[in-house]
Structures are given as C-alpha cells and as structure tokens.
Length: 113
Length: 110
Image (spheres, rainbow over the protein chains, first blue to last red):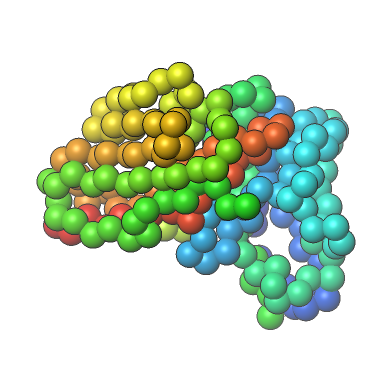
C-alpha cells in the first residue's frame, strides 16, 4: 500500500525558470494539501484541493504559484519564474476525507541557483 | 498569527529518559495533533487528541490537553535513539489546513 509519492525528491532550477512538483496521493484519498517548509521551521500551509477543485488557497502567494489536482493523474504545484526565496522543501499530504489525519510524502527539496 | 508554539525548541536527553515537549496555541480547536519528522523526511502522524479529551495514550506516547490554558504536552517515555527527530503540534483551521509550530528538535544520546 504505497504512501504519498512526491517527485522529484530534489529539484534544482535557475532564477526565472519554472518548477513543477508532483504529488500522487495515497490510494483512495481525494483530498490533497501542499505545505512549504523553510530550514529550521515548521510547515506552512499553501493550498488544499479536492479532485478538480481548489478548496482553500489562502496560503498561496498571489503571483507565480498555482496548483491543480486533475480528475486523472497527480496533483501539480507549479512555480513560475522562480526566485531564490522559493528555495524550500515542499510537502504534499493526502487524506481520504476532510476530517481525517493527513498522510505526508517525503517532500521535494527545491533549490534555486 | 503563529499557532502551535512548541517549547523547548531543542531537547537533548540520554537514552531511557523521558522527554516532554509542550505546545501552546491561540484559537479554539476541535482537536490537536502531534507529528514527528525525521531528518530529510515527511511528517508522520503520531496522535490526535480531541478538545473534549484531557489525556490520550499510544504506546510510549502520552498526550495531554488543557483547553483552558490552550496548551498540550507530548511525553515520550523510555526514550530510544530512534526517537531522535523533530516533533510538531498542529491545529486545524478553516477547511482542514494544519497550522504547525516551529517544532522541538529532540536528540536522544546513546
């Protein structure tokens, strides 16, 4: 029973490029959450999606960031025109229902040169 | 505003000793959750305590919740080297978003 799968585990981009982070939730989970973690800090909520719908995007920067969770395929967090400040670990979590504990992937570590 | 502030920020103890971590929060809650994060890995859910519960046990873990003081504690008894990790408390706000504190970095010395 595979857990939450994130890829790539490490991603290096130059300033101005685009970063695409993928998350496949656990089987049977239709709720997906994205969080960002800076070094030595806790996770900060970014966005909550439920198949094809964005439920809560209150933690998403207004520009350059977008997320989707299509009917088929993984959830994608997309960062356009990356800047050095985007360097962080990005974690995805999923749950079967809204009020269930969230299961986390091992994250994507994004480094911006 | 920052929710779920953990205390202490770092804790180093000898194997076999008990480790206690505290967490404070600011808003009313339905439940409070504790997570563990090993270095370079994602978070693992440890335990959930509901607002109408005062204490909960799971193996070597004991969690308490005081809603009047808006605080919770996580006790790990008979610590092991494998317990070395960062521990976070989290509250749920809005439509299921978890709000984490800065975490406690626990080191168990053999």
